[in-house]
Length: 318
Ligand code: FAD
Image (cartoon, rainbow, N blue to C red; front, side, top):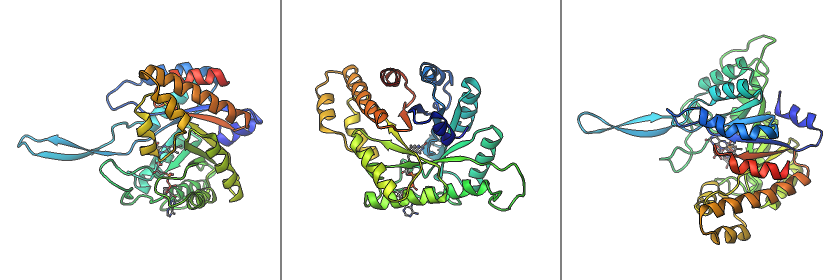
């Protein structure tokens, strides 16, 4: 079922969902299941599976020189979606990226998803590769997420890249896109970023999932401004509990977000990461209780593959 249908059917009740990251190449999928199992009691109607950018690795050749190869460390997004859908009977949402994929490759991924009965996709530009300062579009790929949304939406009209196919059986995906309550790191202002978000919705996006935030006011104001701009699709808040002290530097740096001083002070006062984890859980419980009371459609958790803290939060809130 489509995410928008899940939201409609819930009739104002807040749903629980989460995002997982595929295992590293060579690792077992069982670890992923071990982290999904404890969260199933909260009845997630859908689970997101991220897609990682490709990266360069250097392999030592026999002559001693280094050879640069390109690889994806966490492949398997669509396969994992299919496996989880089958095992848990939930909808799964593969993240589809502009970066690292030609438009043809994207079309094939979407056709695979259609055959697998996957009805939702999350359309994203992707970040810059590790060695790049800024995002560089892949040759033959899209530059921005709104173009990718356009390609996905075209399929529902039978418009494939090189042909229009007259058929009753077009992939008709429900499309999610990313939104940034504290603006995207490359955007000159929140208003400019919101205009780009509007372009994604105008291109056919059905719902928005936000970047993590730790101050609910940022989310509430973002939703208000988005509505004023004519963005009338559900805006799902993305929640990440702080888990280690390093997050104080890492999260603002990587995601260009602010941490409230009260949270920083509480984390800094912790003697070890066990205490930090508890502070993160308590903060997220307060945050999500307020969001739920405000009637958000879904609370979407960034699990980063670990479920024990998400379980504690969900237990307190649902
Ligand atoms: P876009 O919407 O294309 O925006 C990128 C930047 O360009 C913004 O600054 C925007 O204001 C600007 N912009 C947009 N359109 C235009 C235009 N037409 N002209 C000029 N400027 C424009 N990354 C991954 O690699 N894998 C994942 O699985 C993944 N999942 C994510 C899930 C969520 C919920 C979120 C919030 C992010 C996720 N990301 C993921 C990170 C995401 O790929 C990055 O934040 C990326 O830098 C931007 O992606 P986007 O889709 O928002 O890009």
